[in-house]
Length: 222
Length: 219
Image (cartoon, rainbow over the protein chains, first blue to last red):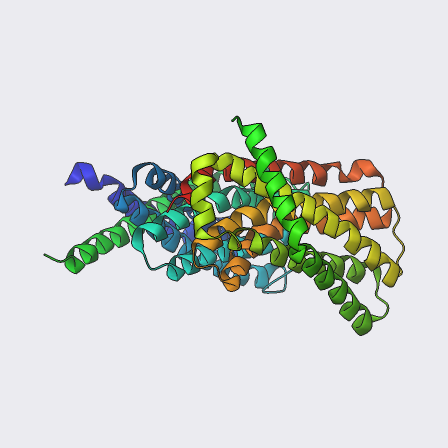
């Protein structure tokens, strides 16, 4: 029991710590940002978790193509479902933050647009799955689209914003946020937050996956 | 038969089939020309930014319409025949190369017609032409694989559009930036970044298509 679930407990403790520590531990006083810099602990980990969970999804799509094991397809689709939730939460936290610091819910920023397009990509994946009835065919074709779209998603999120000017740190020649405005106090909360949210996202995915397994078992003809 | 000769035969067959009916070619040309004309009648004159964006939007829709057909017209029987005589890599490569040729032809005609109808200053015509050619190649590589996926999933046009738009948008953003640089007549070294990234994305897309198509083609 313990040796299998330690990471779930670790994830919960880390999240609890970042919620309390993120709101209480002192942060550097910066112009424009002020106290809203605490949103860093909640907004950025969403994107880290999303990237990790989409990567897991691609790994299982590749596994599915090699094995034709239905469970691999289930993991891949539940990863995408979870990733979409995280991307929506990331967009929402980002929009609120943008409204306070940049004065607009949707400033014309390449990172925002890229994130929105990446979300469209995975929503298209869900629609593609909905359009095919036969289960094996659906699993195979959606796995192929998933693998095909992933490299483009990586370019979209990691390469394109760096080519253009962006309001986000780390883009358009701006230094990354790590280099000047993340002091040691903030690192103490930020890194645990990233690890904690990644663990939680994997946990959500495994729960959804197990629900799907049980549903499949119930629907089988005995 | 090795891969190169297979691709050569399949490509020859695609071109021959197209040449006999000239359906796709004439259809797309008419589509592009009438769209350009509709845009001309509704805009008359445009500021440079709109001129550029409008051209790429026309190209995007023409490309989707042209390439969506590339797997639809193959009947089930003919696909079965291909399975026996050719490797999957040869089939997808032949399709990609054929679509590239078709798109380049279409893009050049569209560009000529568009710049005759709409008068506009382009600073660096050579670079603009290059960006149009790169655009035609990018549309073909991405849409060929997407149309293969869409054709397996019931062949409807909506699916083709929603699957391909998110994948093509990053390329389109780079293309619009590159062609804007050309319009402003910026020094060519400024645009090397965009050309490099576009080339890299195209390589990745072709490589993943070659890897994935063997899994896709068998039912």
